[in-house]
Image (cartoon, rainbow, N blue to C red):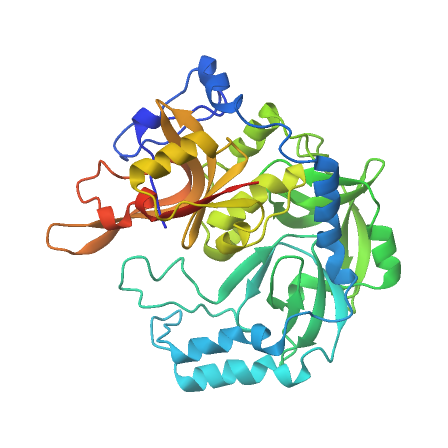
Length: 425
């Protein structure tokens, strides 16, 4: 579900933030510093016990190294095989044949499921694929909202330093089927290294730092990765740890240098200035379906917003509705939904959910509830009934009715109309 910003509803997160107006013809706006307290002071600084929540997050983060096997049932692990029953287009926009799917399914080697168990760690920000191939899977690219960036073979992205457990390898040995703390799927062998108990004991330092800057370069003699907000680094004194692979693809502890401005002690204190700090890093970042191209979709945006503060959220929007107290408002009118959100939502501590999309409630401006979210487009329909999209393609702040003033606004796709509930974390 997609959205856009309207200038008269701009909200201030910090005096240095710029917000894009709903019409691309409107200029960027510099908010006034005096508006800051109007939008951030209502947030509940104590909505969670950060000590407890951060310990839960770390425990979950390292859980794959405590497992004896991948926990999914075989039917769950092979859910991607169902794409063979759909019309799927490949990178050349030619429909994937049954022979193409047969090749991927054979290579997936699931007769070896949970028979080649190894523990490992990611060496970079790593794409998690539905099938063991880099080839994309699109629905009809000629239809609005399909084609790039909606690669249905892209399940997710997991960050550098992520513990994983491997079930088995593809027949060509180029891919490993793995489970992380938040997602399962296929990762490239080139992106991981295998760990043993000695490595694990050295890597779990009990003192951690978390990235608070977005996409800063990381070097270990050579370039390693562009680091994303929420990335966790074990630390010892002034040392920060990552893994490198030896010639046998086994993990070896490596020290790296990170600037003090790029990481802070985990968990980051949940207060106004730090909420602004993280929001600034995420705002205007490009949209990335399933983390494609090292970017974020709606649920990875909300997940990464809360991660530095020690709050774990599920990886997909539906799962995130279970991370707090869910309020069902699906049967309310649009006016009733707005009123309910005004009364019950807590800025920066409440998610707004509709099927396939999730947003972070950030407060009100001129009595209008505002949300921050990463989105691809606004759905429109002209007078002839032809549907099309107005591309946004980045994290933005919007009203609950983004694009309403646009000429071909489609009321059937009004975000407010389709909101199902809110989640008070």
